[in-house]
Image (cartoon, rainbow, N blue to C red):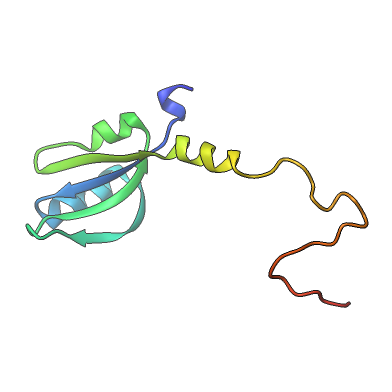
Length: 103
């Protein structure tokens, strides 16, 4: 898989809210959630970007911290999902917390 196809979850932190706002307006990354204030009065927000975009976000007064490789995490979660159809056998009754509804 090339770096173009990878998505990283990053935390973008700026010392000044105006700098972060300008950066987000200029680069338009896919942000997740709302900005958070740090104890040191910095402001940060999480974003989902390619590795190249993560490098492009860094500038004076702004740091980018990689939290995780979101692509690898997504593939790991997909591996946990079964491949077969558990309802394929007509006599098998579904189990779980759902309610049986009569039409």
